[in-house]
Image (cartoon, rainbow, N blue to C red; front, side, top):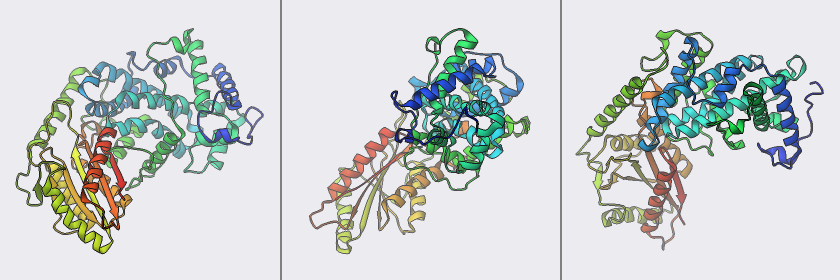
Amino acid sequence: MTSTLNPVPAPAAASKLGPTKSDPIDFRSVMIGRLAARMSEVPRNVVRHLLLPHIPAEYDQNTSKVAGLIGELIAASSKNEPLAHQSSSESDQSISYSVAVSLRWLFEMEKDFGDSLRSRLVLKTLMPLYLAAGQGRRSTSTRDTLTMIRTACMLPELNRLTSDGDLSTWVREHVPANTDPIESILKSFQVDLALMADSFWRQATSKNFGTSVASVRGFEASVLSADKHRSWWSLAGQLCAQRAQINVPADLAVGVIAWEKLLDHWQRLSRTIIGQTDDSNIAEKSLASGPADSSQIDTTRKQVSGETKNLEENRIANDHRFVEIRSGRDPQLSSNLDQILQHCKNEQGTMALIVTKRLANDGENHGQGFENWQSRFIELMDAHGEATNVRGFISGDGELSLVFQGVDRAELGQWIRDSFAKINLANEDSSVATAVALPLVAGVAMVNAPSRSFKIDQLIQSAWRCLDGASKQGAGAVKTIEVY
């Protein structure tokens, strides 16, 4: 490496992204960001799209194909938003195009880092949008993705400041595959790429538009923790490796995600970015043929609404495995569970109560009758547990409760998440935008070797409290607790 960027011992404060203002890393990162901006070759239109994604722009055919696939993700996340938070199709179209322009530039600029690392770096920036396809939170995910693209752009900019691309060589040879280069650069060179990016884009805005980024209306940035960077890096690596089973980081609540569809979408997107696909390889329901107009998005939303309605009407009214109860306070539930608890006390074993429900959208009522997802869930959990004659208690509000014995709490939580994912994979459509994820949540309360004084109501109340907590976290959340 040249004297521009030399490895130095990392202080304790460098163990996290975003050091405090008193840390010398601040000054070093800001100065390098300003230097890079003065020598920058980032085109004016890329700066504009990264800072002002909401403003409509002139469209070109190649970028529109990428924008179409980004539009699938944004449309998918919009479907999970409350009606009051849903955006206009024009706004979605502008943001899709801005992300597409930015991605194409980032992909081109990171070629010195090698194809494998480059793909993972680009995919990581998209992870918030991919996860939002099953969660909603469109505005937050879009802001996170654009923030990460701005930060990821600092890698090639930093590389240009070194002679003969020394940084890219160092990253390829010295950064472990499971470590995000952003974290490694912070520790080894005391350069915070997030702070460098903030300084860089402020300077680039002034350079290109003669104004400060603070005065740019609509500019938004996220403050992203080191844990989020690590989690998104981990997921991106697994998807790039085409892992069949995704290991979701424990600190990342991702909801119900159809990983196979996500991987298929990413493969189509990456091929399109580098120009190795044609329109015939793009799903018919994508926006790949060009920017979508409002009628296209409205039509897609109506189709999804109709599919959801048909699913809700497909009820199994006489499933013998269900015992009807009024609510979690029903004496019939406590009396049945108390019998199981007594056996658990005698055996000094483990007993877990699972309570699941589907979150209702505004104006919907899912509490009537037996829904198809409940029968499917009980079948999947039965297969996981290798139990026989699994029975569930279903309340008037559509809440389904199951009992499992002798299962580890972490393993049980994973079974539930896997079952949620398989329920949502039942949709055979390969388009992410038309994958309607059922907003299922679960609460689990477990007792191990219960004492003689332990009451079944303690387990029931704890399970429903966990369900309430999971409901607040959103679709796909599973909250567990061990009761003593």
